[in-house]
Image 1: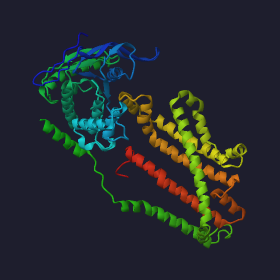
Image 2: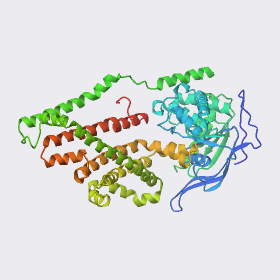
Image 3: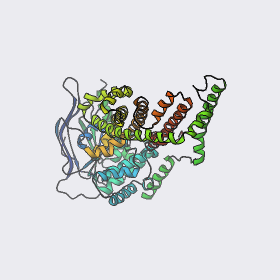
Length: 269
Length: 284
C-alpha cells in the first residue's frame, strides 16, 4: 500500500477545511490481529496499513470474515492489535453499531445527553446541545420518545446524534444502515453526507454493500477475507451530492463488485 | 433540496411511529378488576357450600359469617398485630436489600468471589429459612434479632441473585456502547449496568419479599417472641381451638400478600417492562 490518497471533494461541494499541523486523523500501520491461541487461532487482519485524512470519508468494503468490524474495534480502542500500531493522535473516536445500541430505559434525548453527562457537562448546556443534535438529525419532535417507540431508521439517527454528542473527530460506523429498508437507507445516506460536510468529521464506514460504499466514500478500500488484507483501493471522484441510483455510482460499483467476486471465489476453490 | 429531504424524512418518521389507542382509566380498571371480583365470589361461594354440607364441625372450620364477624370484633387487636408484623417485615426486608445488593454487586463484578460463593447463594436460596430458627434463637435469644436474622437469610439470596442474573444478562452491545461513550468503572455501573439489570433486579426484589414474608410468619408462629403479631395470633388461636380467629388472621395475611403484589411489585414490574419496551403494546 502506498501513501494515503487525498480526499476528493470534487465538484460544487464545499467542505470545511480543517486547519491543523497534521493532515491525518487516523494512522493504521502494519496492523495484524489474531484471535485465539496458537493451536486454534483465527487470523482476522493481516498487515493492514491505512491512513485516513482529516475530513475524509473512507469506506471499508469486504465480504464476511474480512475483519472489517475487528478493525473498527481496534481503532475505537475496544480491542488490542496483535501487531502494528494505530495512532489517532488527539482525535477522539466514536463508534456506531449496526444495532443502534440505544439504552432502552432512556428517551431519545436521554440517550443523546448521556455522553455529555459522563463528561460532567452542566444540565442547561446538556439540554441545549441535545436540542441542537436532535434537530440536526431531524428528530426534534421525538426527543421524549423511548427507543422502542421509534422505527429502526430513527433509532440509528438517535445513535448518530449520540455519537456526535461526544464531539469526536473520527466517526467509526459499523454497517450502521445494514438492517434498514431501502428508502430509509437512502434518506440516511443523504443525512449522513450532509452532516459529514457540515461537521468536517473523518469517517470510517464499514459495509458489505458496494453501492453504499461508492455512494458515500471519498475512497473505497476493498478487503480480502480470512485473513483480512487490503486488496485494492478506489478513489471515488464522483461529484457530491451523489445518488445511489446514478449511473456513475452504478458503473464504479460494477468494477468493484467484479473485483470483490473474484476475491470471494478464491475461497470456493 | 434540503427542505425536500426534511419533508421526506419527517414523512417516513410519521408513517413509522406507532400510535397507541387510548383507553379510559375507568375502563382499564374495570377490565382488570372484574375477573378478580368474580374469583373472590366463587371462593366465598365454595366456602359457604362446605359449611352447608357440614364438611367439618364448626369449631374446626368456621363459616364466612363467623370469620368476618371475628375479624371485625377483634379488629383493634388484629390491626395492632398486623402493624407489628408489617414493621418487622419491612425492617428485615430493608436490611436484606442492603445486604443482598452489596453481595450481589460484589459477586457480579468480582470473578473470584463468584467462583467462591456464587453457587452457595443459590444453595442458600433453596434451603428453607425456617431451618435457621433454632440456631437464630440460640444466638439472638427470643428477640426480634432472631426474626430479622432469618428474614434476611431468607430474602437476601433472592435479591442478590436477581442482581447477579440481571448483570449477567446485559446485552454485550450495551456494554460496548457504554464503553464507546466513555463510561468507565463507576459511570459504567451507574449509567449502564444498574439500569440494564433493573428488570431482573426487581424480579429478585419480588421474590425476596415473598421469602421474607414467609420466614417472618414462620418465625412468629414458632418463636414465642413477646408482643402481639399475626403469627403469634395464629398460634394463640390454634391453642384455644378458635378456627374463626385463625381464619380471620389468614384473611388479613392473604390481603396483605395480594396488595403488596398488586400495588408494589406487579405495578413496578409492569412499569419497567413498558419503559424498557419488553411488552407488546398491542397486548398491554
